[in-house]
Image (cartoon, rainbow, N blue to C red; front, side, top):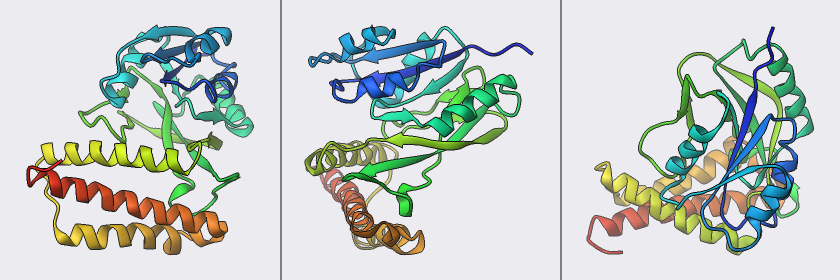
Length: 254
């Protein structure tokens, strides 16, 4: 059985403090494609040091940028990571085992993702196992649709689950998390508005409460201690922001 070639794809913008670990974890792939959107902090130079093929493209949306990266790859099997993610040792072994079998089990593979939050990985709540589909045959799927935020891979055909975790070094600090959530909330509000969705008072009151209850209580986020509590609080605030911004958009306000 021939072993399929594997392309790793990453998009970047000013990730000099994190991209090296990401690319080092992808060393087992046959090529690494980095699509950078104008970094000024040395990200591109670091990527070149790790043997990546670095392409420049102006950023016009997460889904579009990732789809572009997939289309530039030399091989059909794609492993896609964000610059703040790393392939853990167990996940790498699982990928290599599936590859040795010709990726015969599925057209796409998902894995659990665990987020490091203030010095420790979260293992419960909405944060874990947070399964994401990142290994796929582009002939059967990719980053589809029109939503540019919270984009994800879709494939036609069977999807299997890999053992091991994708390690997510999500936030540099609290300010980084809050700023990112504000940006994502605005993008999601604009997407929902364009799709005809409208915010109601119930969305402002109950959707954030449900996000907190689901993550902290029903999915046992409390087992992650104060980090789990903090994570659930901030997640709930993100949901409230999203509907607040949608509420303003539908009233002609920014």
